[in-house]
Amino acid sequence: MIKEVAIGIGAALLVILFQQGVNIMPWFFMVGLVFVLYYLVGSKGGNKSFAMINSSKDKNKVEKINFDRIGGNASAKKELLEALEFIRNPKKVVSMGIRPLKGILLDGPPGTGKTLLAKAAASYTESVFLSASGSEFIEVYAGVGAQRVRQIFNQARETAKKEKKNSAIVFIDEIEILGGKRGTHGSHLEYDQTLNQLLVEMDGINYYDEVKLLVIGATNRSELLDSAIVRPGRFDRIVNVDLPDIDGREQILSLHTVNKPLDEDVDLKTIARETFGFSGAHLESVANEAAILAFRENNKIISQKYFIEAVDKVMMGEKMDRKPDKEEMRRIAIHETGHALISEIVRPGSVSSITTSSRGKALGYMRQTPEKDLHLYTRDYLEGQVDILLAGSIAEEEIMGSRSTGASSDFQQAINITKQIISSGMSSLGVVSLKEVPATMLHDTVTKIIEKEETKVRDTVNRYKDLVKEVAHYLLEQEKISGDKLRQLLGVYKKTIKVSS
Ligand code: ATP
Image (cartoon, rainbow, N blue to C red; front, side):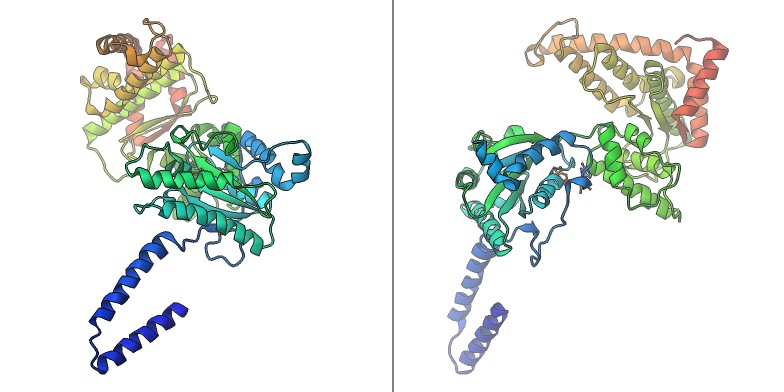
């Protein structure tokens, strides 16, 4: 308001001076200069206001969250709650002689709920919550980042006092941008000054301050952080926020479906089993996409088939309109059936579905259901994965007489798995460092493993050739086959032809 009145008065003054014949050009330049300075110092550097919750009047208000709204992450929640005790129950912590925490680092892949955990920490401790992303502190102008760091800490203290709260949480997402190793950036000075300022602010946090401050940082690249930032006394506690396991996935799905009308056939456990490797953000998207798909078909309730399709969509991308010609479609069907056949033979019950509809970059795809979340892989398991990847192009070759370019990403993945076998000391080379193995030796070992697996897969595909043709034919008619249907056809084939697996 004051700004508008000042601009009005200034403009009126210039008009009066102009009418009285005064040369107003120098004044114009002066005013222009003042505006440029205001923009650089003010909007770029100075008056930046960071997003906050618990602040009733703030225009950047962020949604309030509590721990019940976060699924899975049981150990991360436990560790975080324990760390928050010093804000909730400071006397008890001090009576034990425990040094209060200044910072907590949440480390984990994108979309696993790190921001949610930080917001829940603020609600749980009834603290003021200010959030900013590491990139908001970095500017081309030296000193601006440091000024912003000072500002967010001051804003946190002032807001807490204004709202009569004892504590404030400053949340810095993507902290590796602001707290990356010193001396590694192009514009050293600005990055280093900003990080130094953060260290100064953290060192200045005092347990006896009127407002207790806690800094929560989030990153998925903790290896990039400067060692000064993670040393004891700064980010004292590092909490790993991992991708959810099967139970965590089920919990997250149920949290994101409470507000949705679900059909009786919806089985979230099955969806959780099919979504190995999904983050909380992916699962939220599955629930949302399932509702959108039901809505598109004018259904008032969401049934299981929409969830299954939503998983495909989140995993592979939107369905594409492109329709390959008949010959290409047959090749795609045979390729995908090849993958599925070997998957069923190597790990019975592992195929969830096969489809020839294109999504994202894939022209067709076979989806697997892992029986359980695995964290360690044996050589047998990895060889099985290589077999499944090679099977698509071998099926094409054995049935259509040639390979196609569609298998290049399969081969790349197969080579990566083979290198994993070598680097884990499970190859004929024994325990070696991949970096130190001569290139030709590495190439020969990879080729030997792949060729051995190719022979095995070719033999199996030939024994099941008629089944591959039959399933591919069925696929061309139906566009999609469930794992159960494939298992049924495989069972019948085994009985009539009497092949042993
Ligand atoms: P990034 O590293 O990309 O910043 P993040 O780890 O901070 O991601 P959030 O922003 O907390 O992830 O999560 C994004 C969204 O994903 C949330 O708004 C929520 O809908 C959903 N989500 C993620 N994890 C969980 C979880 N554990 N429980 C419930 N919902 C979750």
